[in-house]
Each structure stands twice: as C-alpha cells, then as structure tokens.
Image 1: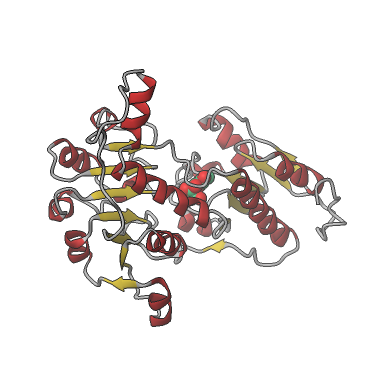
Image 2: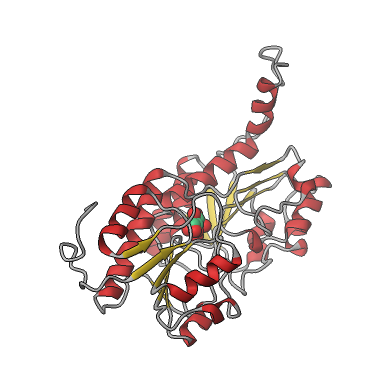
Length: 338
Ligand code: 8YV
C-alpha cells in the first residue's frame, strides 16, 4: 500500500490535514503522506505545549499518543476544522473524550493490535520477578559470579501458583492463556463475568470480589484500563490483604496502583515483589521503588514490537480513511466506552 495515492486507496480527493505529534513507523508515515496532507511529528520528544496548541489549531486530524495530555482546557486551542483525535494506542485516559465530543471532535484508538505483545510483557515481568532476573544480570555484569552454587539466586516456581487477573478484557485473556501454559491457576476479577464457555476455555475462575481474589492470589496482574473507577483500585488497604510473598505485575496504567503504598509494602517486605511497565507519574518514578531489588521496572514497552507499532499505525489509517469518506471510524471511542 505504501505510496498509493488517495484515489487508489478510495479516499476522497480533498486531502485532510493530518498532523502527528510523534514520528510513526516509516511505512505508516509513507502511507499517510501519500493519502493526506500529512505533517509528521518530531521523533525525539513529545510536542511542547505551544506546538501542541498549534497542531490542535491547524489539524483536521491529530494523531496523538499517550504523551499528549489533551484535557478540556487544552481543547480550547482546537480549531474549528479539527474533526478527529486518532490515538496511536489503545488507552485513551490522556484524552478528555467527553470534552472532545462536546466540541464535535471524534476520538479513535487502536484496540486488538497490542494484545499479544502486552501479554508477553506481563509474562516477562511475572518470570523476571519470581526468577530474580535483574539480580542475575547485575551479578554477571559486576563480574563477581563465582560459578554455580546450590543456593545461588533461588527464585520461586510459578507452576501451581495462583494468578489473579484484574481486568479480563483482550489483554487479560491473553495473559490467562500464557499463564495457563506455564501451569498457573487462573482467577479473574472483572466488572462483568465472562460467558461460561470462555471461562472454561481459559480454565479461569471468576472472583466477584476483588478483595477476596487479592487475598488469595500469589501473583496479581493488572490488565484493566485506567478510568475514574479504576484509579488506585490497588490501594494500601488492598495491598495489605495480599499474601506475604505475593507479586504484583502492571502492564496497564500506573494510576491503577497507589505506587507509594506499593513501594512501602515492598520495602517493608510485606509482599514479595513487583513487575511494573507503567508508573503513576510516567517517568517520575518513586526513587525508593527504583532502588528495590525485588521491583523489576520497564520503560513502558508492553506494545513495543515492530509488528505491533506498524499494526497500530494501520488502525490509525483505517480510522482516518473512514472519516475522510464520511463513514464511522471503526475504532470510535465514545464517552461511554472511554
Ligand atoms: C502504546 C499503550 O505504546 O496502547 C496503549 O494504550 O499503553 C501503549 O502500549 C501507547 O499507548 C502509545 O500511545
């Protein structure tokens, strides 16, 4: 498809002004440039406030990422021509979808395409914490490994452990499939119970009470989106319910966990460890958390595969093409499903 013209792609001839806030994969940018009046974003950092305001004021479609916080106040800068915030990513908690809707601006996201990659990283974190991988890397890098010994870096076996999945959407279910293959027992807590056939296929048990699930599981995997209802769902009270030795893994959004409460519990040895790909204040990670040997921290790379990023770009393009053709974009996010 790269290089095809708007006409060949079935897009109306008037070229929409599409501005991206970040650089996107090369084939995705090539397609956007062939079809639209496309302005790529800078590679190295998010747009400054001023540059974001200018982009909001001049774009018809703005391709956003999670590094662009666009709330109601920011939307004041939107020009009358702005019709779509096409988010490059599934989570839209950085965008005020309701405020956008009030201004007649649609919001789309890129569901599905990061499911398997994000679930892989959840497993990476479960294994890295329980098998103490960072300590192992550090030992070799320090050149102080004295060879095999019977008690060196003993971790825990994950087979037979109970996994509690908080949020059993696509990613939660992909984590369940992987964890089952590793011999874990799967439980989940979700707003709605899954159909029985899906539960059976996944071998997953529904816990109607999050408190009860948290108190029973050995590993808690956070896979629900961040919404006002899930903010600090894993708070100090719930962390205190966890078994000593339990592990918390988060590949969703940092805000779902009270990061300071988690740090306190880890430092006090009240729980066993944490594997985090996301943080409450993005790059401003609690330094005490960063210093802990039983906290494995990753730089938000759950969906960071070449294939995933290109697929995200394809979803963005499909949404813009639909808009350009006067059709409903396939991945429309409404205030109700945001
Ligand atoms: C993306 C994510 O990389 O899709 C999401 O919601 O959290 C990430 O994996 C990010 O959103 C890009 O904007």
